[in-house]
Length: 594
Image (cartoon, rainbow, N blue to C red; front, side):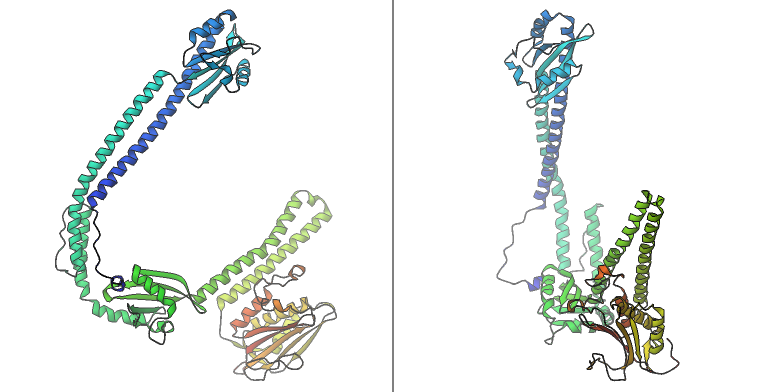
């Protein structure tokens, strides 16, 4: 299909071919040059290091020998001994036991001032030590003590350059390396040309057979000679030719079978022609096909890319509010492309929610764990010996452990709800569930609880979940209602939508649902926070001043969703809040449970 979609702007001039023989010859030559250069560099570096080490050893040896000679003669003979041992590559200066120079300052045009930090070297030698310093230009400075009658009588400082015999040896090695490098490159080029010639003849035969296969001439066998990889390739091509000839005869029946399978897939599958018309599509592809019978515009770039490159893919193609993963492949035999699309919207939403949930849970666990660790460290440091401090930190440990326990319980509750999901409902007497929820909580001091429960209100749901929802809403109301405040729990038969009445409550008509309200006279919720209060771990701007983890309302919302209900909030800052829950009404009236 890529050939079919390519524009024809005139005759295409064939490019000049570069033979494989030349490429292989150049490749072998390159390998020879790289290998020879690497060996050359390695040997050069190694030889230079060896020569430098040898030069240093010679310099140290000559210095030690000269120091031994000076120790055998008197100070008056020092100058004579130094003159006998000096040369163009070795000069020396002698010092007495006080560090004063007793030989000429300049020796063979080498001045003592050219030596780096000579005083440090002489002091080290007078203390019985030895200093060896290498410099650029293969120069080595050596200082050693001079012993006479078993005592340090002075110091000797020498400067030596690389000996002529070492320089000569290095030059000879360099010449040998260059010769070896030239020979290696020449052999590599010749060997490359010979091997390339052997390969190209056989590859041309395979190219001819491959061209015949491309033309559809499946009755001509592929010549297979040799027992090497090229022979194996030729035999594989011949096997492929035979398999293709057999497969083409089965395509028509397989196409019908494949069509039946594709219609049963949940993924959208389409075959699109080079002109953009949909040749085939399964029922799942209907939302991705426009009224004109062509794929929607968002798929166009991927179809063109696959037609040009042979395939294309994306894991996050956004179309409106949906996110799709798609795979597109060229069908050259049909001048079309195959498109497979999978809707990933719900999958990605779940992944994002799970990542946020794990991150928030880890954040909430960090503080109590840090408190436990800190208390343990303080107790280990000695606070356990003080009864008051011990009681204080044990109380802190108990509080932090209780926080972790309550958070873990909330997380497990939420996990169980997510795992169970929607289930078959029961008939729940909301009046009984409300009374049990009130009894399960301790009413804060100074807060009045009022009940306005309509008799005969039955919901279709899970009694344990309804009780837990009411407990969560009442707990939230208690926390946000100051003393002398009022918390009101209402329950009544409701309708499909909750319009407000003049008193500020919700009074939907009776019939299809049950409406539960929990209102308080507390601080209220700022407008900018109302859309976030059902988020997991969200506690509002005053969360640091209150207990809890921000999971109660999130769990309540999920419980309501499991029972196919709705939950919401109405609030006015400074006047209180009212949370409402709407659940499906029971369709029948058997013995209720709560």
